[in-house]
Image (cartoon, rainbow, N blue to C red):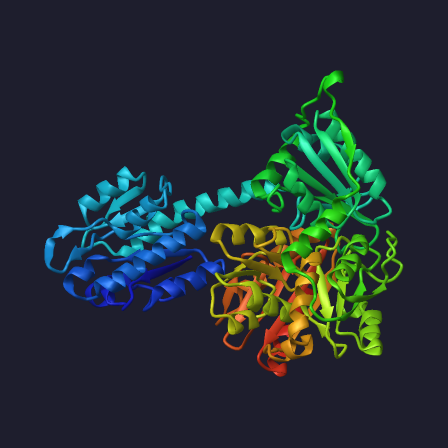
Length: 611
């Protein structure tokens, strides 16, 4: 737990030396607003201490105080309320012209303006008036006397309570989320993901949503899983529309006319996997609260069972792909010059969408692996560089302008430039952000630091998973988000990761400037990535090992929002457990090859000693 003193000039240390007892626990930072933002983004619990009365003594200016007030509002708006712990010393500021006239404390003012419930939060101060105001707001309060060291109060009174609350919330969440991972529910067919589970999922969704659209990708188990889901939905009295084999973006687009959508897919996972992802009408995947509700029904079995004459109806719609193509063209327009584009859909669901979309836009299209086949005979469905040799070769041999590759369900998209070079996810993430992000961009802790170096707008990092990127985009009002895995979310279009829309958008960008020129304009830092598989039953012991090893690291900023991203001055390394399969993912990035190798070796050693 860090205690950060929020004061633009760090002046109160001169007046209250007893504030600073341990530099390890108490951090005095001039320009603290930005520092606190970085600590919060890194997942470090922060206690904020501020003294507003210094404005009345001429120590900081009214303008500086207003600056802090605006930051407080932004912090509250982003986080909802307390970030693990935000501690506030609510000294009321005074007008310089009249020190006897108190103003409203800025934190209470920010909370009031944002309609935020402060009940149960802590407020400490040296004014009875402030304490009364805090009590009226529902805060727990403690009046500090001049002789009472502030840090001791925080350590003994506030932190134990806040830590207990945080741990209680964390434990409850971890116990409840037993099925959903970072991207829906997935597992090996007839082992982890069974028809019986599919029926329960359908029954749970049908209990809460009465008009549901369902679609599937090309996987061999698609019919078995889809029919089981439909049976559960109908039994709960939901009316179901089956749109057949479609990409995930097509399903999410069609869900706008329904209460919910179900996509049967395991996305980029190998052929033996299948699963589901649930969608809202606005193109947003089910959020954490919705997933918890579905799980509660699944484990309790408290489904609605319709009477025999109220069982839901099943309908069929075969025009969803056509409507989706027409919609995208209406948004991005047609090409103004002829382009040759090679498309590798990996035998996945986008085989029915992207090649036809690009042709309709005016491109000359050559296809690879575009026959729908759930065995994925052409290549592994994950569009990694090592799986795209045929596409890279075809683009070079044919002299094409662009190469496009999708995963199994079309929510991901990566590219090959006109020189036959693989356009990595971090590079595309930066290019799309530069093109589409005007207000701000959201990405994950796994993305390159090049994004911050290339943008003049806010960049917010969240845990891995497109639903978390989309949730943060919507909450902050940012217009673009993505992951280096090939996930691109354009708020102008939808909160669904849309590889098909991204392919069309990239084609329009390449029409104006070759992709090779765009890629060459983006800074490139050496980055290393690697995966380790582990036995699922060893997950807890591995998590404990990683926590212990990371705690030994010094002189680094540790971001624990999702695994561990350990940041140094000249680079970072990361280790995290996948949310969709028993895999440990490690990465490193630095400004030099030597440093990237050094960091990668360090994190690889940590993982190997825990396997």
